[in-house]
Amino acid sequence: MARIWRRGAGRWARHNGAGEIPEVHWIAGADDLQAVIYRHRDRRNHPEYERQVRAIAANVLQTEVPLSLRKLQCPVRVHYSWDCLRRLLQAKAAGRRIEVDSVLLCEPSNEELRLAASASSRVLQADRKLIEAEFAFEGTTQKRSVNYVVAYPVPQPLALARPPVLVLDGLGAQQNIGQVLRTAYHLGVTSVLVSSPCMHLGDSSNWWSFAMM
Image (tube, rainbow, N blue to C red; front, side):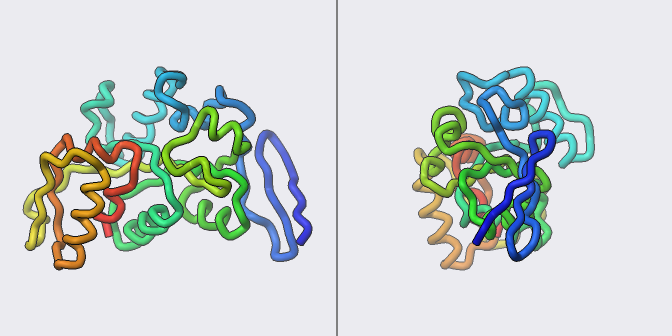
């Protein structure tokens, strides 16, 4: 099927026989501020990164946020995986407070573009080599990859926890968390309490999206 790209002000709209595909913002280089949150920590523009993270958190919380990112009550992270993005959309539809600020794609299909647009109004795309060199996280180097910036308020009143409750603390790897959560889910666990060290194990993974379902 023929595909036609129309460009304007760094944005692309793709058309085919089924109609227009969601608008995409093209990332031409590593210094594009639209993708500053996706860039490697040792190469990113830190003042702009912190400004954008605080703005996203403030938008989700609908309040002013502290200057220190360590004190944010709404973590803003880069995560990956199409399956986990679908779980996040399901969790959001179920009423969870989750905000996908943007989605970064590489060589997406039309279906993947539509899924990305259903998750966020900001859909970004970059060349595969650029993503692998500057924006790659685990799971991103495959031909059709997806990364996304997601914000999720963490603190919840303990009164909202419904038994049976699982408490996670002292785990050393994010893979362990995933295995524990999968087992707990099948055993009927409905609430999960996570220590701060365990939460930080998920900074570049999507283990917690399973817990939100």
